[in-house]
Amino acid sequence: MSNHDLFDVFKRMPKKVNIGDITIRDGLQHEEHFIPTRAKIFYLQELAFAGVKRMEVTNLGNPRSMPQFEDAEELLKAVHSDLFKKRLAKRGLKHEDIEWTCITIRESAVDRAIEMKKEGYGPDRILMMVSTDEQHHFANSGSTLPAYWKEAERCIKKCHDAGIKMCGTVSTIWGSPISGPTRFEDAVEFTSRWLSIGADDIEHA
Image (cartoon, rainbow, N blue to C red; front, side, top):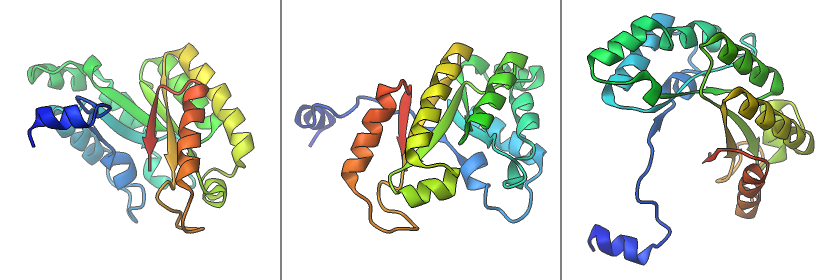
């Protein structure tokens, strides 16, 4: 079956996809030892040289519970630095074509992202997340789902006012490590809810 036939059969199949990389954030967050900041910057640079246009840089939550991200501010300053931009330009790449993302589970982290944006080195896009399993959601965020949805709605408005995109993530759609199987219908419902309160895009996990 040709590509043309596939698109005829699956009318809603997207004609293109955007590939993002989450190695520096998700790939390193559980490492036992702190990965040097210079190594992270180098990795982000090489990803940019390879043509990746969307990258998760770090998590802006409290570094006391996530020491791998204690260099969040330094990393963001590095990828927005003149030196980083010059290196991209030498490869014929434009810094403004790359979308830098940070994880911001709670409102305090969102506020931190906004302050960084005002200072000129904040993320272009941030990510909040809900889990279809409420036990998993509480373990991840320390909040109940009803309270979190209200918080997320406030945060989306603040982000848009600051020129930051908000990604709404729906987690545990294929099952929870805490409670086991989850309902796929909840994943669909949560996706619709994110869009209804203004999320710019959705990720599923």
